[in-house]
Image 1 (tube, rainbow, N blue to C red):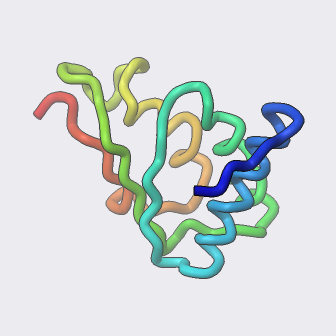
Image 2 (image 1 turned 60 degrees about the vertical axis):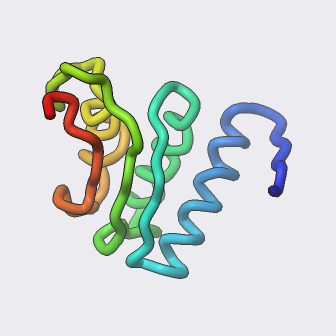
Length: 106
């Protein structure tokens, strides 16, 4: 395991975004395991910024989120699907069919 120390949240977010962007560039068909919650918001913002600048494309990747709240529709603002849409998926060129978040209504 590699531990990365950063001076603040912004630097940590950028370091994490560097790791993910390097993987996406090296293997444009990679699968990313993505997290929800407040911690990765800066990371996702950085990835969106690089995408908007034309530095990064997510067109070939797939993503997997491992959890969802039982009983919540994907459009519910407390659901993980909603979180991912608002913070990442709606702002990049990932194909909707390549985003995998559990169905809270299943």
